[in-house]
Image 1 (cartoon, helix red, strand yellow):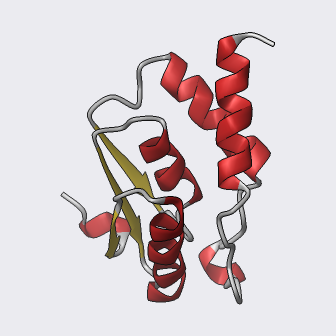
Image 2 (cartoon, rainbow, N blue to C red; image 1 turned 90 degrees about the vertical axis):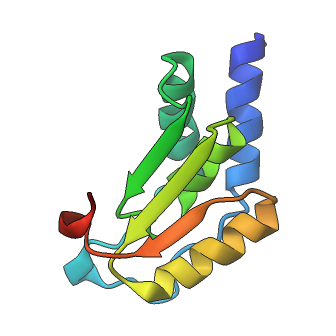
Length: 112
């Protein structure tokens, strides 16, 4: 197995520890991103150089993509969501995985 694929698989295994929504609100389009899909998307972004510097995750939910970006070396990651309930889970997830991610409760149309 080549090094890039190993890195993606390791990321997937770490992301499987991310806790999902307790009670998803369908009207807010809250649904989990599977760890396999998140790792594939994030690894592709990493290979393209898109995770350097600051990464913004709009509608971050419980933090799957934001946390994964930080695990892959993004300098700063900020996750925004309108619902404070999944943000509490996202903060726990970040702490559990040992990464520093800022989570902000805000509608995305007010972000500047």
